[in-house]
Amino acid sequence: MWDPAWHVVALSGELDFASTAALGVLDEAVRSHPGAHVLVDLSDVTFLDSAALMAFAVARSRAVAGGGALSLHGASTFAQHLLHMWHLDTVWSAPTLPDDAA
Image (tube, rainbow, N blue to C red; front, side, top):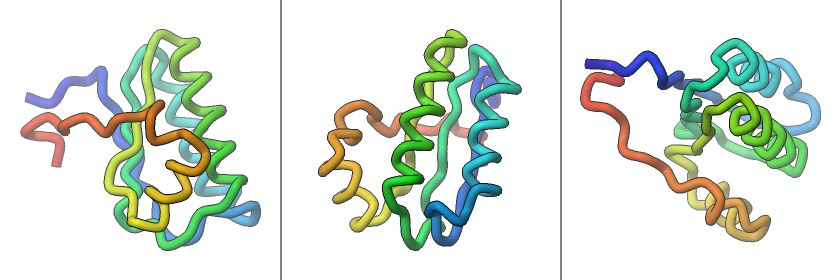
């Protein structure tokens, strides 16, 4: 059964300085689900830049401060490379989704 302590945020398209609405969804999810594990699905993200990476870092800090966690899942090869360059791949290990998360 799906654990309500998990909250999935699916992002898509280009995540950059101009995509404040998409990144705002992530911030809102963290703020409105304190103590939850927020899993960010990046499967449909085609591009990300430093603004998105900073948004991930801020969201993670807020999640942890609220007693929760944040992890990234489904990053493309490009995104994985950026996360590695920013040393964010060691901060977030993608967990296994619960069986009925889909």
